[in-house]
Length: 126
Image 1: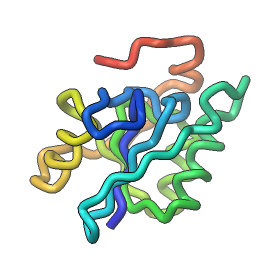
Image 2: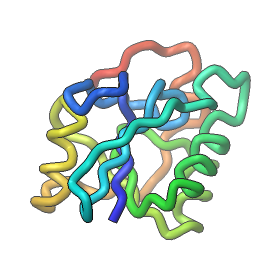
Image 3: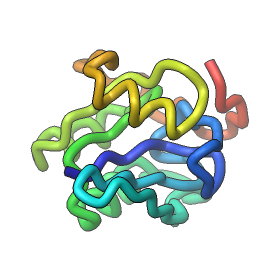
Image 4: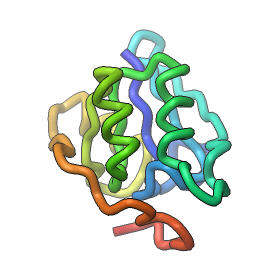
């Protein structure tokens, strides 16, 4: 299983970024190998459609679950259609989120946040 966490940098000790479409990096944890990989979010600076582009990038990486803070309506639609579960982060670091996920301590995000919530925002912690 592959778990994607929206991240502020390319390190497992990085803070989770509460924005899905506009986070700078995606941390991908593989439960089969117990390894992290990191990919830059190419959609971070798009004028519009960041959630759509980020969603497609995650789908291309064969991710099974996403952990983040906010997912807009378009991203939620695409991720849900690809059968990717979306979870609300708790705590601070990317590595903590994996542990919480594996311990079934995260709740699912069932409703999208507002469109364009991360546009212009640099507040990555909640």
